[in-house]
Length: 302
Image 1 (cartoon, rainbow, N blue to C red):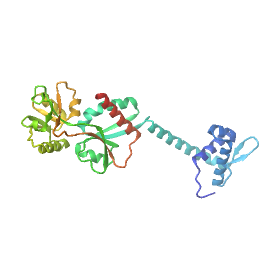
Image 2 (tube, rainbow, N blue to C red):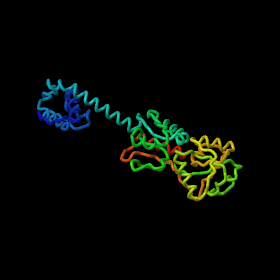
Image 3 (cartoon, rainbow, N blue to C red):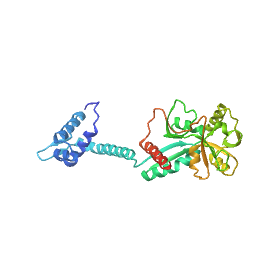
Image 4 (cartoon, rainbow, N blue to C red):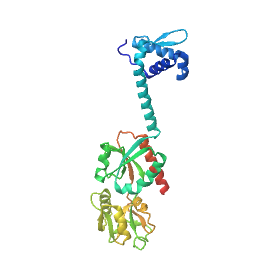
């Protein structure tokens, strides 16, 4: 026996098929190959193992004692290989699998419901796991591979991740129709001075973005309330407590026809929602399909 010999899957399939049918021609027909190919595979297997597996007669092939001894092992190997192949096919065709993503609660509240509904209808066998983490944990969840990818607005993503824009967004002022800013054709940062405003509290990426932009524009913002959740800012604005500064996407997702949403210019500040992945890591087919479902859901919302 060749000590370095390892049977191939094709050789084992030919062996088991010949053992079952006892004829090269029948085995060739079942395996969709030529009779000479089956004969060659059996010969290679016998040469590698250093033993005869079949005794040739005029009518059929008779398994030897060595063939009988190795049959169970060969069948088990083929079952395992077939099971593995079936598993990969199920994953690639999204008949089963899992999508795990990190997302901050604010973004999840308006982005996830339509995306999960759409994806669930198309791929009901794929489980979606949502890691709703705090903004300061977002990037570390991705780098640590606790999730497949993330959806969010990291202020400084870092070199360890790659980003792709999912939704182009801008910072806007949100107010009620009777507010002095509601009637303006355009709203500049300098126009916000003196008006009671509601904004995110320190620790959230958009807070430093707003402060820095207002400072560069030379305006002192009159922030009367700082909140942790944009949903709180929405109801405060609806209650007449002041205009809110927030990303346009969240304000539009509130679906309140009474809200006036005005992108702030001079300068216009982008606050895009990004797909964030660990650098060098490929997304699974299920993850790619989920991202596509999000894109389609967003188009429907436009």
